[in-house]
Image 1 (cartoon, helix red, strand yellow):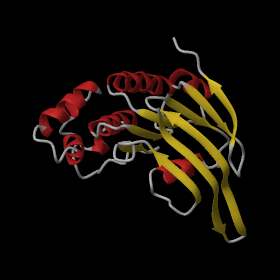
Image 2 (cartoon, helix red, strand yellow):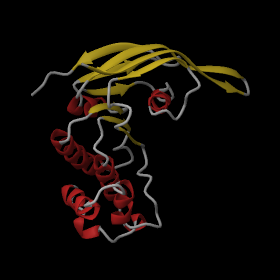
Image 3 (cartoon, rainbow, N blue to C red):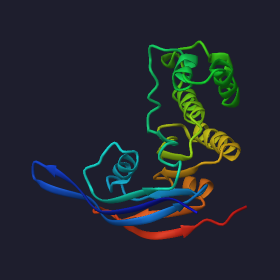
Image 4 (cartoon, rainbow, N blue to C red):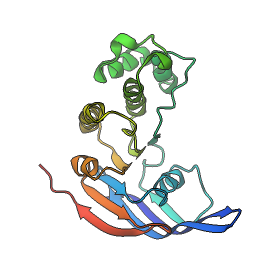
Length: 216
C-alpha cells in the first residue's frame, strides 16, 4: 500500500539575482513501512522536499498525497537535535507525551531504550552531541510515528559514534515500524539502512536513479 505519493511540478525560490528552481517534475512514492534513502549533491533540494512534506513550506506547484494516518503520525528529525536547553532530558521527553497518563513511565522506558536513563535529569548542554541525538531519537519514537522524515540525523558525528547511533536507530525502528524518508550524503549509510535509494539530480532536482537494496 502506498503510504506517500509525491508529485512536485515545481518549487522555486525568489532570490535577489532571479528565480531559483529547486525541484521540478519530482515524482515518487513510498510504500507503507518502506525505508527510502534520498541522496544527491549538496543544495539540490533534499531538505526543501522534507519541509514540503512536513507542511513547513506550502509554496509549491504539485501534490502530496498521504495514506490514512500518515499525515497525523508524521515526525520530523532535523540535522540538529533541537532540544529545549532550559529543560532536562526527561522534561524534553515529557513535553511530547503530555496527553499520556503514564507519560513519566513511558519517558523512562524510552531513555532506557537509548541508554540514557542515568541522564534523565541532565540538561542538553551537559551532553555530548551524540547523546543529544539519542535523546532526539527517543523523542521521535515517543510520538509513535507512522511517517518519519529524517534530515541527515547522524551527520557531524565521529564515524564510530554515528555507526552506533545507526544501529540503535534500526533497533528502535524494527520494534516500532514507520515509513521512513531519510536524507543522507553517505552512500554507505544509505545502503546499510534503506530498502530503496533515490538519487536526485542537481537543481532543479528530480529522481535520476532508483536503486533497490537487497535484504539480508
